[in-house]
Length: 108
Image (cartoon, rainbow, N blue to C red; front, side):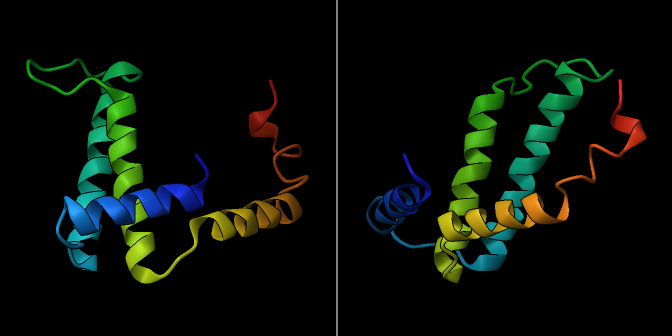
């Protein structure tokens, strides 16, 4: 699925099943909450913390939640994620093309 299609699918779902978009501030809070859930899983799976009874453990599901809310925010603020992502990659390819290769902290 391309990003444009993902934005259309989410918009269709919101306008039928979801009734309407939450406002931008609510969605920003929801995005923060979902990113926190991703952080919790990462810190327990790859860090020093252990899982607690009842902790969510499905990283793929939580990342999908982050993506869904991000798409909602893009839709309601008029951002074409596909075009924005292409521009972002172009920026990274020009600005950072040698930056990471020259970073001694990244050398093995």
